[in-house]
Length: 389
Length: 151
Image (cartoon, rainbow over all chains, first blue to last red):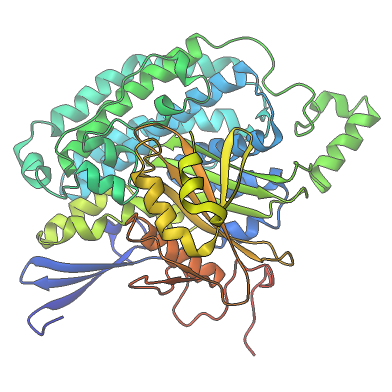
């Protein structure tokens, strides 16, 4: 760097980096000449830990990746193991999984919306967005006992059947939600300050996104309608009616528009899933991965033995390898699992959308003003726990 | 997905194509990786324009010990392919596929960081998740789970 430029350290302790991201910026006046992201502050070695856990024990580790969309991580992981074990999950479980995944997407986008708007000086949307997110957290809590880390999925199905209130609460949430999104839009969509701060900022066109491996709302805001829920449907997504919102400009404003519309679509899907919820088992009957029913443990000695075996030793999938990806709120979230036939994975690799999407940062901030960097980082929607693992 | 055209061009450098749980696996030699990836990307019928993921696998004590695994996706055709390259030795080296897919940059740095696999021609191959003065590569099987305590 020439002596004319100034190095500015942004983060890792800075509210607008949304966690422990550090970016070293080279500034010429207020213009960014170059940027060097520095990550890894939250690295906990989750992939190493997973190699030393049974397949069931890994479920709770996946919660700790993208903690704003923990259910999506659970889903991607259990589906990868189910693929490895060749398990057919009952329809009821798949519907519940889809409903939860969509509620989780709304919760994640709401948190993004509130904090992102707050970064740029708009205080009110944060309170609005967290109000609805709180209702969703209540749904997760009533179902699993946990707000942020539900771990409600098990390999082969769910941890338990949903209770009677779940369907009603989801219905009442989706009844009011479209009106609530209108409220957010009233605050932002035509707001001249918001537009001035976001339009034409942080542009990445579709070919650039593909070269950089960027997926999710960032790719769709540039006009490419890639969504794994449509491209490679899982969890009965092919039975629900929904659109894939796309943008054209690939800037911060279009990412906002895409996420807003995605929340509306997610509410529609969640509604369809609970309305069409099939009756039947909620875990694959007879599968070696599924725990025996609690009631049986008091009556049946073989159930106790099986339960003990699953907890202590786990189950042994065949040797082989699988990759399964789902559309998380941030993009393609995949799990690659290599099994050597033992009860623990030989290798578990997470394909974290945040990590890959963050690579686009340097290209987006070059030549922009320092204030735009905050807008651009916000619009990537990273979760550092997932970036660093 | 038809990989016959590749077989004609690369001959013995690409191994058997296997399918497990509906996923196609292709094993390839280290030396042809960049030209193979270019062909996979540019061949009309394959068009793997999206590198989903790149990672290492340590199969210690098996030999060859390491694998570098590429997960490819084609936006145009919607199909996926896994390419696996076995690497032996304590200091495994392979060519960087950065010229083919820009996204390989951080993936290769991560793979170097955690496995100690070197990527030739990578312009900025340094640790990414761990501190620069960290010793060892923790995803290797001979690296202890509880870490190494310095005296």
